[in-house]
Image (tube, chains in turn purple, cyan):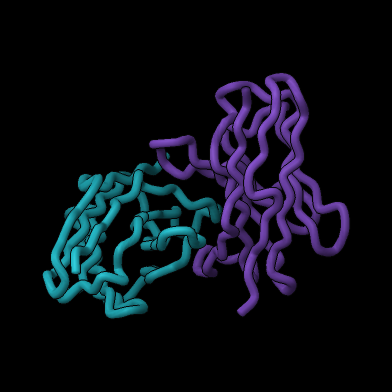
Length: 115
Length: 115
C-alpha cells in the first residue's frame, strides 16, 4: 500500500540553525500539508500546498518557515533559524485531490529537537 | 476559528468492554468531521469521516461515530474493544464549503485495552 514517507525520523539541531524536513507524498497525490505537534499539545496545521504554491497557512507559519516541491517527488519544510519552541513532531500529509472529503494520508513524522 | 475538545485524556478498558470517546467541536457553520487513530509506532490513519447524510457513520475495524448537530458532538463508539485497539484517537474537523482543507485536531485520547 502506498504511504507517505518522511526523513529524517529524528533531527537534533542548535538554536539558530536552519533545518530542512523532507517528505515524499504518495505519488498521484496533488495536495500536500505540514502539521506539527508540540509534546503534550494538539496536532496543529501549518500549511497546505497545491499546484506549486501555498494554498493556506496558519499563524504559526511565519517568515521563518517555507515549503518547496523541489522535484516531482519531494516536499520539504524549511525552518530558517530554529527556536527552542520549534521543537515538535512534524507530520507531512498528502491527499489525492483538492477536496475536504479526501482523506489526508499522514507520514510517520520527524521529531525535531532544538537545543 | 474552529476548535475541537476531547475530554478524556486516557481511557483504560478491559477487552470486550464497550467504548465511547467524546468529541465536541466549536464552529459557527457546517463542518466535516473525522476520527483518526495512531497505533503505537505507526502513522495517523483515518478511521471514519462524516460530511453529510446519515449522522451515524461506520468506519474500519468495527468503529462508528454519531454526529449530533444540536450538541456539536461526534462521539466515537465500538461495542466491544480488543487489545489491538490500544492506540491514540484524534477527532478532527474542517469547515465545510469554505475552501479550506486544513484539519483542526483535538488533543487526542489514549486508549489502553487490558487483555
